[in-house]
Structure formats: structure tokens, C-alpha cells
Image (cartoon, rainbow, N blue to C red; front, side, top):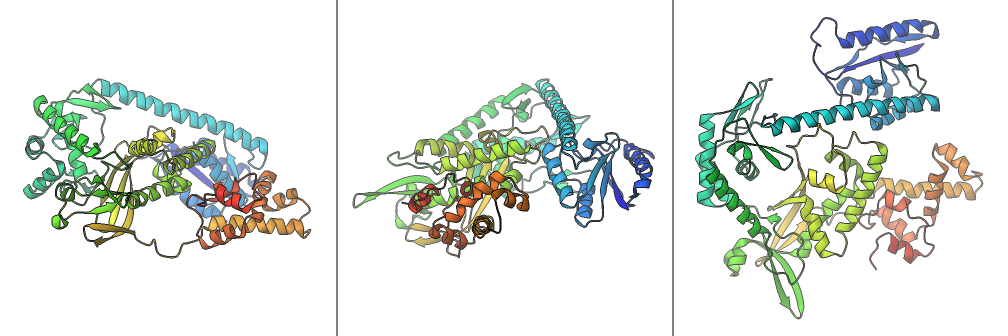
Length: 560
């Protein structure tokens, strides 16, 4: 008996409330096909796997997840769908699904397209079909982007976070007079106070809160005290002077303005002046990578400072109080620049080296496998540029995607621009990405230990034992194991090992030389002491492997 599971999907929720909808039609066709194969022992599984209102461009679908779990539990022998694109419209996701089916010896059948996934020709035909499905999806996304761009050029508000001061009526922005008065007050207070930090304190003192929105499901968002980020966005939102922003351009909107042009110009001038003050170097005798990016717990920027002693120059990031008053009791922080810069750059490099995490934070799940490989190479190159020696280029590179660093008593918060990072890695972003969610935040636990006015920065957990990388350890174990098989005659050739491991000959050939790594390198990997950036990809592509152990260490990033 062959247990058959029917999977159905519809991209939108339109029509799902009908007694007979698209999901029912798909299911009927699949059931009829299963009945026609009764003589082959096919039998339908009673469980329904229906995804109504879910896109085929993602695998984040409840019924699909249940189906894959049932496959892992070996409860299904055949998956039956109406068309291939009902299962997925992404080539990358299709490859993952087929690999999972192969592991459990599960077949895949399309009712309207006769395929056999166990043959190379069947897989090729499926890939061609999915290429067209993905092309259709991308063309649809382009049409949506073009429609949004054309509508915004005509001044039409196309949705998104509803700004304080406006409500929506008939899909148009209309002024909410009560909230508009609050917006005008915030602009006036900023002109009076001069900084967002002081504005935030005054707004909290007066009990001013963000816009409260009640969703259709009854849940409530907003209605909370303003954060500095909220205020920055509010003060720089061109909607308040009657404009519609789109991709760095603004167009005359169909809604009424809340803020007069004169008030707007004053606010923007103050904000530009504050930004220039934060980013202007106070001393250029030695390199500082993070000037204008680092702020203390009060929202004040840390300034760069230098000192000389016994012919040696020392660099520091110091808080505003110390910059204005160098007395020991002035308060604030004085942090060694090299320590702070390394503390901030380390998690950024680790993110770039971690392919799976990079896929998550940049929303790359719809990318094809070749694109993911290219992006991973770009990420490693970017990480190595950050570790390079060119101070000026490193500084420009960091400022391109590090938006803000906030220093607190127990942690450091690093805000990266998702858009800028995607641009540096040449990521083609889909139309369905949320432009409002453009910040990647990295958190580091720290301890600040005072020594006079100077503070020693201690990364939490830095003194603990290193954890070995299991993937690196497995790579070394495979190399030694395969070499022993060949040396002892347990395997007659690399091809025999490749067939046994279900891998390509070239992969075995590339990894085998790692059996001759220097003992010190192997010990460091097993103890988790290998140099930062030494990962599976870098180690497995060390080709040809130098026979000299010192050269091996040099190529793998060990200090001289």
C-alpha cells in the first residue's frame, strides 16, 4: 500500500469562505487521480494539508510544515499536488523539499503534469517548470513595485505604519486634529530644546505617547512613551508637510500638511547641525573607526581623544562631560579605543561569517542556491575588509552599514542597516520585504570596570573556555578517517569513498589533505582556540595545502 497525502494551496484568502473554493477543486482532482491508481496500491491519507492564503514563495506555511513533519515520521509515501507551483514557487525551497523527500524515500506527483522525481530527466523538467513559476512570481512582484511607485508619484498614500496625526478614511490620509496638535507640539519643543534626547525627556514628562492603533483582531499596538528612534522618524517624516516619500524622492501628496514649511526647515537645519557635530572628528592624528556612531546611556555621543606617554600615543572614546571638563570628578566614561572598536567589530564579523544567520537577518530564504553561495563569498570578503589595514576604507565601510552604537552599563547595542548591508552584499531584495523593518540589532553583554576616570571594557563570557566548532571538528575527523581507509586498504579509491558517503569525488579530494594539518592547528580546533574567521568553508578551500606547518598557520590567520 502507498499512503498518499494531498497538499493544496491558494495564495490569497479571497473566496475561501465559499462552499466550494479553489482548495476543494484541487483536492477533488487529486482524489480522482489517487483512485485511478488504486491498482498500484495507492490510498489517500485522511489528514488534510491545506494552506489557504499563503504565498508559494516561502516555506513558512502551517500545512506544509505539518506535511514535512509527517514525512519525517514516515507516515507518507507519496505527495500528490494539482500543480508543481502549489507546493512551491522557489527553486531554493524546491531543492530543500526534494532532498527531504529523497531522505525518506517519498515520491512526488503532480496531477496535471506527469513527473517522476526519481529520474534525472524528471528533476530537470521540474526545475524548468519551477523556474517559470519563480519568474512569474518575480514579474508579479515587479508589477506591484511599479504600481506602488506610480501611485506614490501621484501623491497617493500606499499604506504602512499610520503616522501620528493622521487617520485613514477611504484609503486616504485625513488629519486627526487631537494628534496633529501633539505633532506640532513636538516640532516646537525640538526647536526650543535643540536635541532629541532633551525632547524625549520632555515628551515623557508631559506624558506624550505614540499613536495607538487597534487591529482587526482586537490587539493594540502603540500607545507607549516615545523612544529616540520614534522621535527621529517623526521629525524627519515628509508626510507632515504634505509630501509622499519613495526611494529617496518626495512627491506632492493628496493629503493636507500638519507642519508649516518654515517650522519644517528649522527642524531639519537643527538635525543636520547635530548630525554634523556628532560626525566631525576632534582629532585626526590617529585613526578612529567609530567617531559619531557611539552614544552613551544618556544618548550623548562619545568623543575621540588622544594622549601621549613615554612617546606612545593612546586613543580613547570619552563622554561629553570629560570632553568639556577633564577633572577626575567630571563623570562619564573614558574607554580605550582599540578595545571598544574590537568589541563592536567582532559580532559584526561573526554575523558575516555565519551564513545561516545572515540568511535569516537579510530574509534570503527566496534566493537560489547559486545566489546564496555568491552572497556568502561576498560576506566573507566584506568581513576580511573590515579586518584589513586600510583605516580610511574600513571607516567608510563601517559607516556605510553601522547606523548607531549605544553603550550601556551592562551591554552594547549595535544597530545595522539591513538595506545598506544588503546593498554591500549585492542582494536582490524582493517586493515583499518590509521597508519599515530596516534595522538589525546586535546585543553584546559587557562589564565596565572603573579605574579612576578610565573604564575597562570586559566582554561578558570572554574569559570562559572556548567552545569547539562541531562542524570544523567533523571536517578534521572525516579527513583523518578517509585517509586511514585508503592507507589500510579499507577503501580502494576516492571514488569508492564518495559512493559510500554519497558525495562528489571532488569534495573527498578537497578534504583529504586536511589529514596532514599541523598538530597544533588540530589541537586548537578541537579546543575551540582557532583564529577568528577560521570556519569550515575557509579550511576546506585551503587548496593546495602547504606542506610547511608554519605556512599553514599563516594561511589560516594565525598571528606571526
